[in-house]
Length: 88
Image: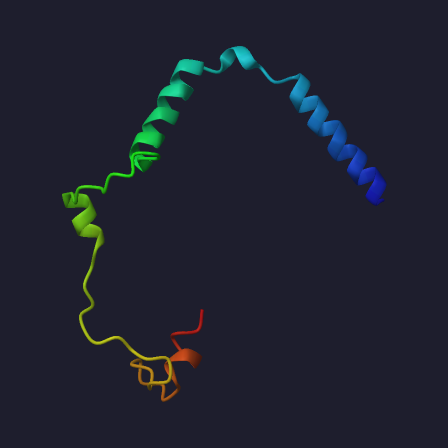
C-alpha cells in the first residue's frame, strides 16, 4: 500500500509539473514583489530601522508586574501560574 501511495504521489507531481502553465505568470510582477520584500526586510543594508508610528504601536507596556512561573495564578484558581494560565 505504501509503494502504491508513493507511486501515486510521484505520478501526481510529474503530472502537475508537465501541465504547469508558465505563460500566465507575470515575471515582472513577481520580481517587483520580491524587491519590495527585500526592501522591507532591509537585507544587506545593516542600517538600523527608523522608528515609525506603526512600529511604536507594536511595542506595548504591561499594565501590571510580570507574573513569575511559581507565583500564584492571577486568575484565582490557586494553582501556580506555570500549571494554570502559563501552560503553553
